[in-house]
Image: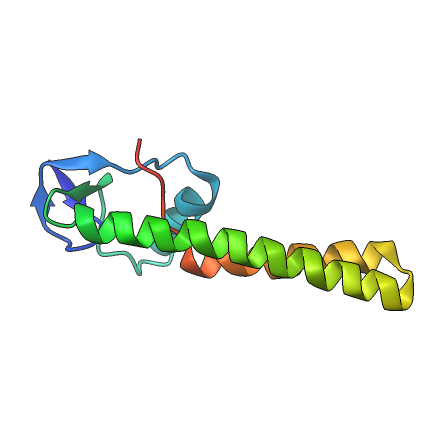
Length: 107
């Protein structure tokens, strides 16, 4: 029995990938700061799976949206300034915004 990361109940769940660099770091940080209410492994129960799949679809579409916005911004910045280094930095910064809608992968 694992704890569902969405509803917080102990049920039979599909496990989340705790080795994922973003999600694993987030969970470890929250546990060290004693802000996490979940102590064991996390997963998604059958009742929450529909909501999880919606979150995953939203995250994937935001990655595409932010990538396109980053490419356009970097190209425009490079066109006006001629500085490739800051164009790349701006692109990375814009793509990193997709972390705010991050959805952890299932194992």
